[in-house]
Image (cartoon, rainbow, N blue to C red; front, side):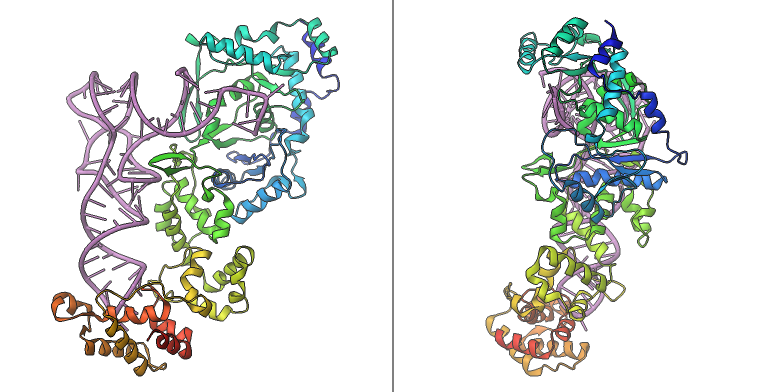
Length: 549
RNA sequence: GGCCCUAUGGUCAAGCGGUCAAGACACCGCCCUUUCACGGCGGUAACCCGAGUUCGAUUCUCGGUAGGGUCACCA
């Protein structure tokens, strides 16, 4: 077989050689330890928590080492490209503080290693494939879908592994004349890698590779003649990945563990092409508990997988980032406790510290982390965030916020002043529910009075409270009155007294306050009542008590 | 089914041959307190199973088991 002739028949138009591309895309001029990472989403328009999770790793690894983080759009699929998908990807990630140094942008791309859309790199791939053909490391294959189906059926009945390899790889034996004939006849074909791995399943060899997260991995070598160029002339992911990450000089490839099983293919491709493989970091899949079983987060069933979920719930991007960091690196929380006031960027992130078993997504933990994050954010900034969030996701409450900054900021700051600030606030949706009693239209009584307070007592408490109410009382004068009201009705003035002699009292001052609290805010838990009344104003305070009587 | 990855409390997760097996979230209790919180202190709760190596295994090896992934002209 004259490989040269074959390659020219198949790719007459390709003139540039791999050597040319080596010159066009020289090694990057970066500090010795700089890492070059990339995010390679396919433009389906759906970007999820897993993407963000991976993107964080990419971003941290690159920027921590003065390296480069770039965006490459992997659109080799003939599936429909969703309009606006690239914009969605970029803006979603930007919202969470992830920015690219290079690659695809809203309106094209920037950087010297492009183009960054795989669909625009056809000639480059074909040049490498032509080279492989010349070296006898690849071949055209004219097998039809049906023929492949037959092969598979035969393999199944023989209990052989499926695929095109060994004696099944009939395309390997075609003569130049047969190939030319097929092409003249207009038969579609793909290009397959001529794998040198042993197809003898009993004793084919393995190789070891160091994974950046998992350590030493032992895998069987590839023996499949995988497709590297589809009939459409577009390369498969495998080929595109290897050529691009080499040419774009990627040093670290961060991807999900679902890629682990195609690693042998990639390693063989790197080898055949004469490239140095990058360091692979295979991340664990994000999981969810479902009916007692762990399972992969799914697009359909789990709204929390979508990045939009966090945006529409009104989580602050900082909070999500903080949460992701805690599940990404086990030592982050510890570091955070020691460094509460610095930026998370100061944390030294390491791939080795990543867990290699699937982390379960924990909304509880997110909320807890979020509380800690929000407590540090000034009311002014929270207000700005909240209005922005409402404008986009909850326009019906926007009128309550807009132009009302003084009022809202006072509310948000309730109990946050002292040394031990309250941690009430989690996300936009929750914040609004938490403070909605400040708006008459949203104020409802949600809870009943404590069990040990009779209906008559409740009415008496509120009646006396209203009668003695003086809006200008300071906090201690105000509370003394509540104590007196309670004592008159048989409630202990101090919870301790009640605990010591529970039989001597109907309850304690806490129960009395709860009645007032429910009348004022509709529930048993809220910030300090006195402060709430000061914000609510005298008229509303009185009328709410009155209407409860 | 073949191959690969994984396996410590309800969840996340330290550990890397000898520990009373960290810590965080959740839960429970107590304390603080002028109510609700915050905070502080404490508690319940774990090494998947079986062999082997070893004086000694959560840790190493091998088998099971379970969960996950993957077996495309999708990425």
